[in-house]
Length: 235
Image (cartoon, rainbow, N blue to C red):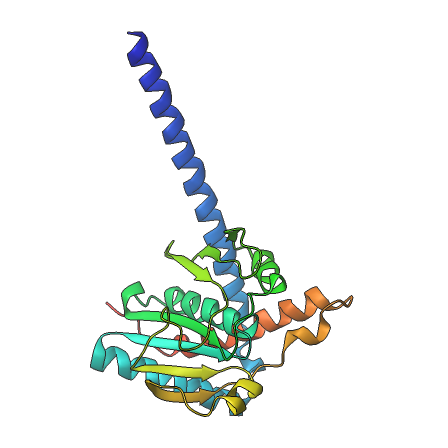
């Protein structure tokens, strides 16, 4: 009888942990969806010339899904520490927001050099509402956050041709002009698209640091949501 009582208590404790975790995940998802809702109201802030570039990405995604039943987007900047990391996250979130199944679209990021995913990038994502966990590595930590579909997404600095990135049939989206200029050829790339963003690093160590990173996150989220807003949900 005592053993049964202990087992029941352990079971109730486990169920309580699951319930608390579920409530926490649902609350996080609602906050991120609200953030996306706000960005959608800002589509008119996107200049027409950038909309044309974003429509190129949209066309690639749509064509890949029809012809190959999957799409791979690789976002590239110099250090794979700021803009490419944010673009990887927001492209995945935007696709899920608009109902694209997880297996149909995968997002990746890479740099021409390996450094680390900048802690300011992680703080900006945390301010949105993501719960981000670090593996504690000192030099190039790996951070994990959950997408809207509760799928773990790992963020860490790597080269664009890392073994963790696709080797063929992908679109390389160059999110900084320096990487675009210094990396004239990306092996296996099916389509290359230049979509530069101003580096938020310019405000590092200043009073405007957090605001600059938040604005960069908003801009990238807005544009990735615009890309997927033109796609019908994939069944």
